[in-house]
Length: 337
Image 1 (cartoon, helix red, strand yellow):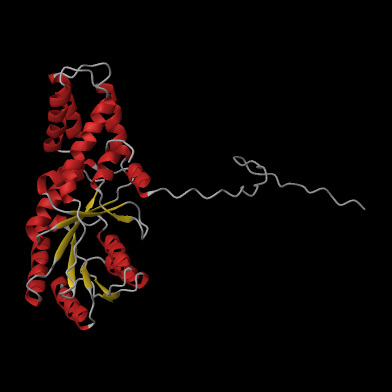
Image 2: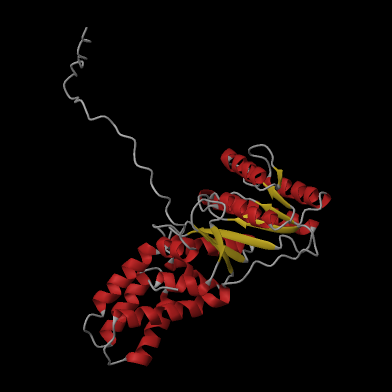
């Protein structure tokens, strides 16, 4: 006996029967990009804009005053800063004035001058482990990746065999406390937190005492970054610094500021604020992804001359690397290594 044909239900208006969904073909894993390739991808927005505008500017043109002025404006618009823009145009003028110049010539000179600005600030983060714990205070505006950066630093340090404690000093955000606790678990670090809205300086005091008692090598303290209430934030940071200084005259030994590479000129004013309040003595630039405006790091380096210890690309635990001046300069100029 033949089986009855399967009758498809009539679909309401606006629907249609589609073909059977097939299992997708397995996709071969993508080859892992090198750090430099990822850096180039992260700076792609800045470098592609710069290189295309430079190429357009130097199409069949001899180098004259007007072209130099146009180039200077272009470099300033890319957030590189007046000082670096002048370095590039001055070098170009002294070497090639009145001669034919290509976009490649300009990119090469630009990379060289940017590297000269960045080399003095590309330094390793020095830890004084003769005085334990070495206290790292991490400051920065909310959203600049402070807590994630602390987690990545902890991963590096604990991975090298150091005993680390993380202190959740951003007592205004429950998410920041919880996030830091998770990072402590992931990185086998000690953790100290307090209740929401508690005194951050009091937490810093307890953290130092506990880190000392537990013989931790490094204590990393997270902080709030509420710029909308600047006076309150400044008072809080000043108090944390003062309290730590009473426990150890040299503490905090390192004051790191995280900067979001996508914020452009805002990052420049943020360094000014936190340097005055908390005595920032080192920088970490985060969020160097496709939307980054990485030129601002050059302007900050030229102006403040603060060490740039690490740069972050992505959210993964390995996405924080020591800052290399030559690599950054070449990537921003759209050149290879």
